Image (tube, rainbow, N blue to C red):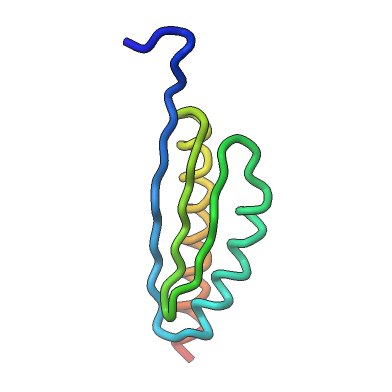
Length: 88
């Protein structure tokens, strides 16, 4: 069990794949705002061809969970919009 002086930190990587580089770029632009908003810890958003990668580092488990939930919610919305848009 950690003592009071030890910090529990964590990190996670999320990657979302798109059918086109145009869709990936749109998702990247949308997710950048969330990366700038992060308070405890930090996150970065990277564009890699047809994929967007989000790397999250957190100062504590609570902020890691909050960041993961925020990004997962946004990624779910972005993916749903992209799929609806590409149906046409």
